[in-house]
Image 1 (cartoon, rainbow, N blue to C red):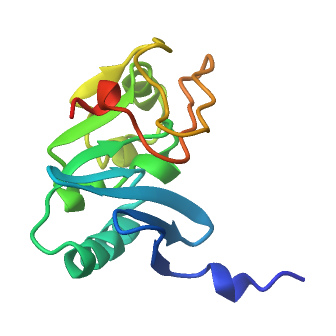
Image 2: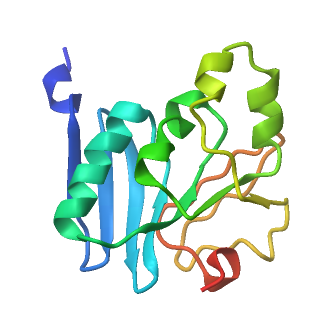
Length: 154
């Protein structure tokens, strides 16, 4: 039987001076510290976002969340981001359609809407390093390392 206790809670792990991995239970989010602010993926939920906010205040005090990127539309990845006060939110163009179509309107109200929608344009969205898998029909994508200036605008 697996050790379930090791998946409880939150943890921010330093990968390099500017790259962190945030773990919430078994989910992971990428956090990049840039000169302009913090770039991060999925807030997961309100409790996780509060835990991440506290960790970011510890490792990057006063640095705002410049960009939050939703990896996909599932509510267990996109709820609660308001606590982080992102200046910009990126999501696949289809994400808001899925949120509107889903029956749980209470969760949909907890999603910070995207300020910028990413189209199915593979030339604009490229990982700086090795792993980019691309969009599928549901607007899902995977980015595991870092993002190019073409995506973030800086």
